[in-house]
Image 1 (cartoon, rainbow, N blue to C red):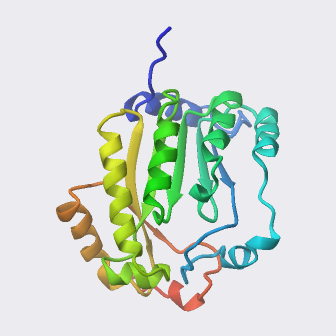
Image 2: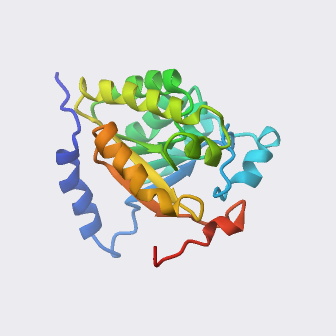
Length: 231
């Protein structure tokens, strides 16, 4: 039997229907799960740095433990996997499959620092084989070139981001259930360069899916939250 594949268009009616059920239905629509405290970037705007710095002492939930959690949850449509850097988990595709199997999850969004092009492409390729799910990979970009490297505290981070995007863009031309987008975390450091970032994404990379978010929670460097709204 041929299984139909999820696409952005096929997902929208289901997602809207779940919202329209309203407060009378206690089932969740959208679940966020932090799958690891490990990360190889040290962004000053990140609220998770204390756990990342202590990640060697923090044991991530095993895949078996996550699957047991999934078995106890009601159905929900959208899952956001966060961290840390989710793709540092070699079992990430299996983690995703647990929710697709047991919770009928049909959209899974994974933000990434994009520092591991080959690993990310390999895992996303495996994930995209599951046609039940619409996969959304959100690549973090905080500047163009050296500014991105500086904010991520990783030399060469922008070059690796570029390679990751190119690999995933190529993969997305061969499957119809993969969406690649960018996410900009707006901070005091990059607030004057947002148009440069958008210009690079649109005119150099020829891509048009970009989100911008303000810093959440307690930034590792609180001064980075001082964004000038007038700008």
